Length: 434
Ligand code: URA
Image (cartoon, rainbow, N blue to C red):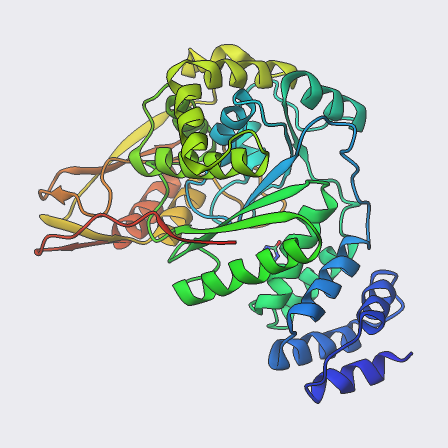
């Protein structure tokens, strides 16, 4: 088999076989195919697309290019949740203890963020002492004992994806549905879950900006999951404005805790309830969606989820007292009010620009080497649909680096569109793909 012939076949819009896709992924991972040929093939895939079967083969080959984690020593059905990412997305911090408190095992591997805000691991590391590094045995024992553990994704998972993603990034071949779906799903499948829930974000702050693309990506990933015998559900949820009110690592941890105390923002509570209910159904802990919602709500109102969060934090070396005393979390030295430049209804809060403003304050990384300021960020006071008078407070910025304030403030204000006509609040869930 020759890579030249595989490139030519895809260039001519022909379907690739499993053997051809396996050959490419294996040889490219090992450095036996040069970047220029891999780039040519990726561009041919980008232009001529892959069908459902080819996409499943690609995902499988990428999954097998690194370690495949075996979670079979953990009792119960392991359900993983994956979000395609967005601004203010602190979902795992609230959802993992919620679902675990209902009896479903949560064995989660998470990543760090690059770009406008931190990832789940960065947020968890805002908790003093919390460690995301765990030996495999402790990870498995923790889930069996406490039903919950979250650790960092190791470098040995889906090795081909790391190389291919870096190449796609510089060859304008990132935004192809098959390539994105295979890249996300190969890592999920290698992480050992039995069932997968996908939260595909749509809108300004999301990877997929339009509803059509978001549905197409969700469908492609559900097809892959089901094609590889993992029950998979995809939800399409809003990321046209930030999720909840808090953006920034420490601030998002507080918002997640408040949610478990029953004081969460409406959109975030709804998202946690909906995702949680589907996770319980997938884990066979709830018979149907309604029973799932009931169990999730009970875990909050009874305080069980908050207790589970404390156990989770303590088990991973963190200070559980942060749950009752937020001053133990990294705290910014300065809080600045951001006021509305005009009166009217808020019709848009560009999520991405809010994320960039928070990043400028120190909450996100511009380059991999950047060190986060875990205390920095923004707390919104208004959402789309709210009325504001000129001079009303739109948000509070939390910061330590005063020299960054002006730049962050300008970008933040520019993210708002305020109009005279009444505006309806944003919808949260656009659909479910099974
Ligand atoms: N996230 C991934 O992991 N891969 C992609 O290709 C896009 C987003």
